[in-house]
Image (tube, rainbow, N blue to C red; front, top):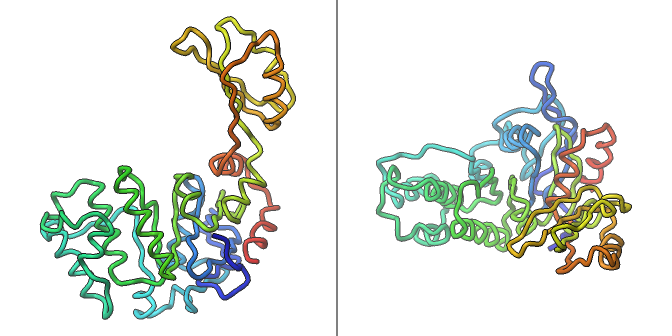
Length: 324
């Protein structure tokens, strides 16, 4: 869903700069997060995502620049503000002797207005495990319990740092359902993830952070249309097929092949001229290609393209685009 990007923002990050000694971690980062938006923050390890989340939630102060979340500077916000912004970190320690239900009840007691405990346990898929001790939970169940205590206070802004890491497919579906429900109810979600499928499925917009700078910020569909230039052409051919001429075709970057179960070879051709490459392979009378197919690059191709390049100082223009 695309949103009006010029209205009031839930969060505004403007020219945020963070330095530790001589090392720059965030370099003039700017973007806005809109009401009801699921906003994804993507980037390779070491890009500065965790530091940025810590600044947005008041755990760190930027060296320079400004942040506004729900009308307040996070680093000086009061307890009322902290009840409106909930954070699920990648890892946290809960009380091992409490049961699942007791844990959620404890967190609910911190809020004047909290959600129904059974409803929250059901949403995260732990209703039947309510009597279990925390110490007996599996890793995936413990992460779902972290999600439950994060959402019990009905936060306006939900900050999730790699929430799907280590989750099985069923648990991931519960997580995605919680995120969609929160957004549908008017809540805002800031999500970091390395799962490009997750980002494409859930996020209204994503920002790609590379070496402390915003390399791109837009809807997943627009980023794919603008930046995913590589397509993959697949086909099968006889085991003795000569693939040399394919490697020389305009736009072809790599050609990979492997023997299949029928004594032929399965070939993958990555190219920036997908349609042209497909036609040339189909027309090659010596190759006799079969099972031809083509897939366009997705958000993962965008990520690889941006994260694989050393960022230049032209990134400033992308940050300015992210603000508008």
